Image (tube, rainbow, N blue to C red; front, top):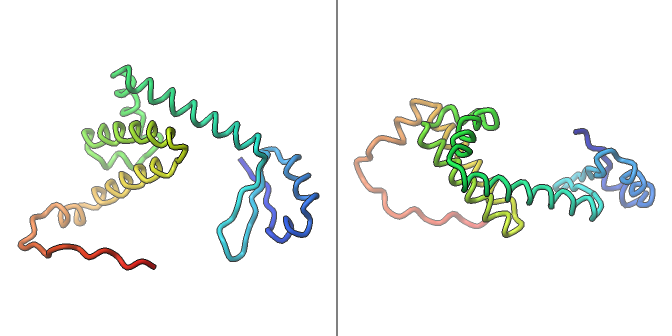
Length: 158
């Protein structure tokens, strides 16, 4: 899906024209490019609510299906490589753990109206697959260490 783009300056200087462009946009959203900050997405409140509702209903249906039918869990485990090709580097048991954690997190994140935990779970498992895909790195991390290096200090706040 292509998204129309405008600059932040255009939005500021040509507000009415930019909003009209939003109304005519096929995706009903505009990508607002900013030079010194993260880009923004401009959309209508109605469109945002539609997207939120669709995502929430999809998550609830998926979670309910996964909780009620073991065949659904097996099917999801089997098709997961089509969605996340990197799971091929995970052992089957870990793919199943990923599915369970993903479903649990989808349910909890939807109840908070916050998709960030879902992305965090996906990224954590992707990083695990990255390590397992590199036999040398996987061996290093799996090896016993000769000594305990003690408590890891908290990172400095930047």
